[in-house]
Amino acid sequence: MSRWVFPKNSTAPTGGGADTLGGVLRRLDLRSVRPSASEVRRLIPRAAVDVDVAIEAVRPVCDDVRARGDAAVLDAAERFDRVRPASLRVPAEDLEAALAALEPAVRDALTEAIRRARLVHRAQLREPVVVEVAPGTTVTERWIPVERVGLYVPGGRVAYPSSVVMNVVPAQEAGVGSLAVASPPQVDNDGRPHPVVLAACALLGVDEVYAAGGAQAVAMFAHGTQSCPAVDVVTGPGNVYVTAAKRLLRGVVGVDAEAGPTEVAILADDSARPDFVAADLIAQAEHDPMAACLLVTTSVELADAVDVELDKQVPRTRHRERVAEALAGQGAVALVADLDAGLAVADAWAAEHLEIQTVDAAAVAARVRNAGAIFVGPYAPVPLGDYLAGSNHVLPTGGTARHSGGLAVSAFQRQVHVVSCDADALADIAPRIAALGTAEDLTGHVDAVEVRAR
Image (cartoon, rainbow, N blue to C red; front, side, top):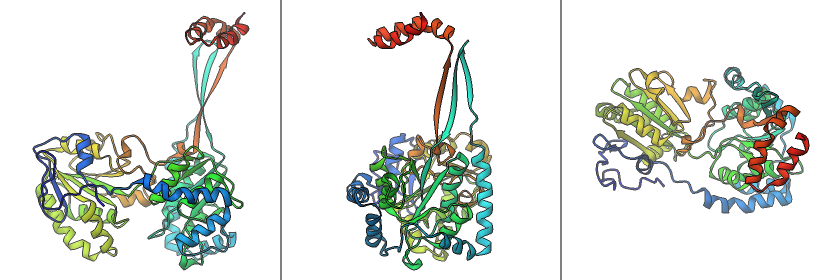
């Protein structure tokens, strides 16, 4: 259910200025008002996802996995995925067979996606930084990879081999030595994950793959089972139950951002092509009926033309029912007075994906503060980032781009400070340590320094 609960042709309860204007997409007329960031987040539709409620649903599943291990994961697969895998870990020969059977064009595309992703993520690696804070005292900042990670690849409505690439490549580039992938078992694949997911794992050299989905997969990684040793970090997008399990088990295991329904915002002026804009809204909507699709524009004419294009394009798209549901539930146009106002709306909403289709798009994009990823100009649509830009498509959703970024090498490393100090340097700073230690009534701290400084 959308948080934006007023009907399409009614007046939004904002106290002035925000009315729906009809058309294929709901419209908010913000040309004469400047809503606050909190008002923008309240007015513009996103699917409501109650993770706290889902936690209570996944708690017994996670507890069962902790208690019974493999058997609990297999029982959960039979209950939720309607198939019981013959084994939790996918045999190596199945991975090899999936790669051998992979369509050549798909293999070529995955190979290029891997190449580009490696270039981008390898550039994120940080060299140790040594800072001399005073003569004889240095602090060295090191980035150390975690030992083992669990990478989750969703497999609900469609297969996501691209998510294998987006999870595995940064972990490999970070230097993680042990990687495991989990993806839901498929009824149509004899209880194994989707063949193209298996093929992508094989192409990346990952041979530890588990037929496990949902909360039970996260619990398997967090607690460990007879087949799957526990991991240090779990990453990867998933449904609300995967998200709930991450929240529940955070602290038992490290996790990346909580991923909710996918979303796109497009900031456009009258230079934008309506057929491009409509196609990009549809592309995001086909992910999920709960996907959010927002157009922020200074042009009523563009909004009208996009409506016309949606009328043309939606009936032709393969997943038209899913697309129509998403656009009806979480599709909207925000009309703004100028690009400054449009940027304010975009920053307040903090989209997972933000496209800039304006005159001088690069300059406009440089002013954006809050977005998971920014796509500049008419020829950088979100699907480029989904597959082959080299950027990561595991991105913050639900407005969390205000404080979080996309999956990166840093998710698989820890920052460690290495402190070095010689005798003269410690003696020189000892009086200041004594002053602070005494102020905090921690005389043992003071003594530990003074015994060396005498």
